[in-house]
Length: 79
Image 1: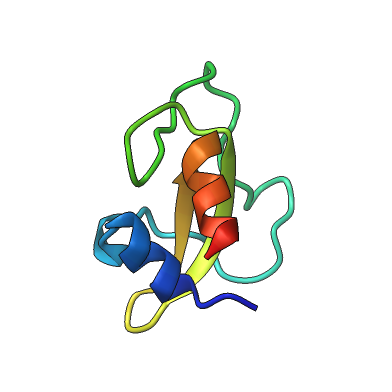
Image 2: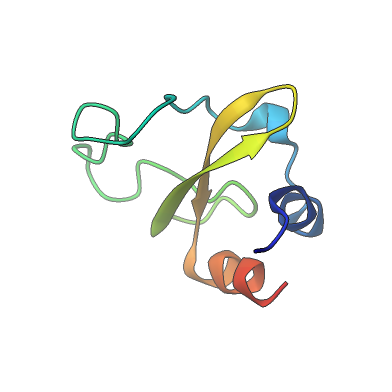
């Protein structure tokens, strides 16, 4: 399992800048709002339109949303 803080550091993302995410299991009410037009959410690293979103735990901050474009998502997987 990769270290989320290592991925954030490699992509140059400050965990405090990420939007808070709900605690507990994600269901329809707790999932990230995707009802807006495509491109509403931007990649947390580069600002391109996001194609993937996941939750991660930032120590001292709790759960946060990490939005990624295709390229930044691949970089995160490769770390």
